[in-house]
Length: 102
Image (cartoon, rainbow, N blue to C red; front, side):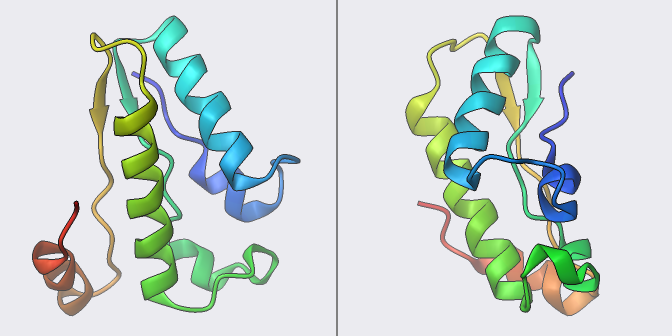
């Protein structure tokens, strides 16, 4: 199982754009793993000034965008992709249940 690198992304350790990084993550996952997490923008980003993320909605929307990218650009159907559940509070988690994913 492969992690997505979302925490490295928000900490500033990733030296690629998010669009480039998500493609590299997907290629790496497809090459070496049978289960992978899609690149998320964790809500912890809200507590990391270097992330530049300022709202829950931004975390969620960027994660959804990365989910759509991964499902549209995967080349190995054998890779099972898992999504990350967002939210720091029950209200935020419940909001995720009603967001249209496609």
